[in-house]
Length: 126
Length: 80
Image 1 (spheres, helix red, strand yellow):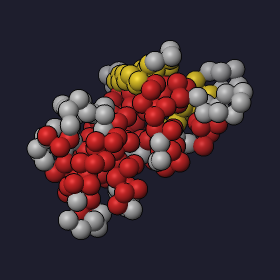
Image 2 (spheres, helix red, strand yellow):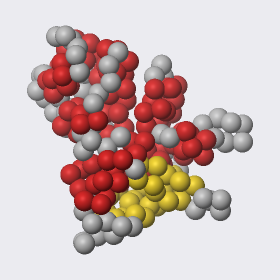
Image 3 (cartoon, rainbow over the protein chains, first blue to last red):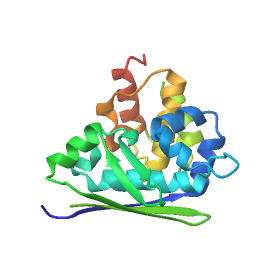
Image 4 (tube, one colour):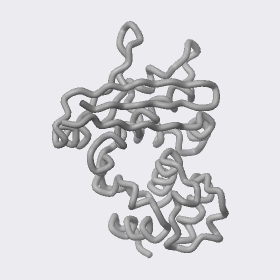
């Protein structure tokens, strides 16, 4: 299969706004897995918006890389996994995994970055 | 229903223009709505109308205009 790639950029302030707003719990539950939320907690236990923003960017980048623009995919079906040494990988389930199989993809690679104001991610499917 | 949709977009869509000035069929993405903002709009709509969008509705085209959002809300049982 031909390589497929997706990229996304997120303003950290918009994620911080979602965490401050009245729909915070719904937002966290609809977009991120409990493991992702825990991975984004700092030493104080506070969820850090820049780390969450990088995960949102990864989900959107994966949607762009999947066939059919990822239609019907729940964002929680694209999960950023943080390994014991801090290594990052992407786990797809449900509809997202179906779309991966449909395009003949077997490997998914992700790269994240964030600064104070912006977070970005790139996803490659091979 | 469309007045409530406009209010949600005003609060969560982060558009470059006032939603009150947008036509029902105007493209919200072209008006500046990002993918993250569209997710926030979706969540606020679910809370406002006490519904959940179907998985099949989780696509860009459903949230691209006030008309398309109203159509999706009708399909999940919200009365116009």
